[in-house]
Length: 451
Image (cartoon, rainbow, N blue to C red; front, side):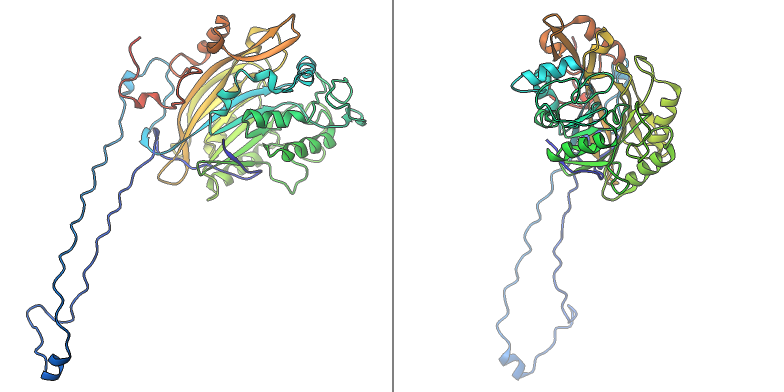
């Protein structure tokens, strides 16, 4: 998994299209020392000099230089071969190491899920053990943490902590969420490297709850972006994988309860100027190779992005964002490729939907693990070379007493959940649980294979 930093920036890119590193062959030539005399004017030594001179050394022939093997050019696929709705990126098939990212949606701990987790040996891990390997297989994994994890706090103030018990006072579900801090450790054990803490539930336990949440995340080494204890701390975090430094910036459209008097949460639409300046600064930093923005935005339960989401997405990309991964609607929203003012191609996925939660309708229980690949380019910065998705679904078992996040293709259904997801993103970028994590399949000359 990725080496985790705390708030800063990370990730360069490889080349425009897909993902293989550029190979440079450097050949050095040895240079023979020059003689002080001209070749056609050998000096005539005096007798004394001739007597003192050592015998001439035999000439040594230069070692033959090995001819470097020619480097095969990168395969350039014909876009005419691409299946309908295939999301492809220029330069995807250039050479270079690809860093993979897995992204999941809302970790929203309703009371039913908390009760199940506190009674289980693996705690919250029991909810998503069926997909943990599909998250951990990426180099960096991201989640939207849409719940405070503040021990010993009710919505009204400090209280005795009940431990691993859902008491509906300290640990509560909707509408004032709060979960046991063991959730942070369980996310790390699952393979999550970075979470967003900027969302409408960030202040469900007030300013103190936000601080305790960040303390709990820091205690287990889980990077976080979008909220801070004081103005002395940065809004962003940095993760590093395979030497690629990715800066993560998160923001929210609002917070539900109480005013953010201390400026602890970054807001997408009321602090847009500050948000864009942060993205631009990170994108230009020599210490950052890529910038991923995770806005908490949009209208709940709407499968289409609002105009203001689209406008802000383009502004973020123009400011230097490598990718934008949204959340908040609790349902999936489309993805698309946006082109920045400087010609870069970026991925925008407007909503990742729910991940772990208790919401009943099919669109709210059907989601994805999104994968994207980044590669460093010749300018030292990283760009997206490919995107894939894997359908997941929350299964309710035993008259809604237990909940499990599952891979639809691994467990064989439900078919309507799979169809909903494929209709949203198209079949060409679909990836299965047993497939290799290849971000740009078009770079295989035999792709797409005949059915």
